[in-house]
Length: 65
Image (cartoon, rainbow, N blue to C red; front, top):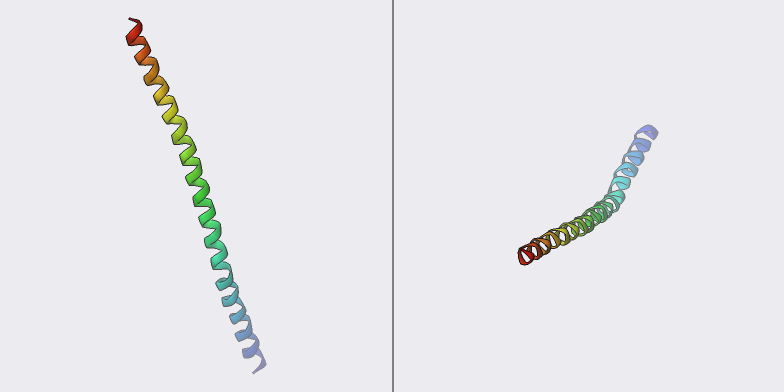
């Protein structure tokens, strides 16, 4: 009947909308993961530089004594 046809059309549209949105959601997730990775690299580099600087200062103290 007409109501069943409309229900099937609506159901197909919902399934199609989910199928279309899934790759977009995956792309968005990948972008967020990549941004997180970039932040991680940036902060690791900052901490590495600070660590190396502290090591350098400790060596200078040893030589100056």
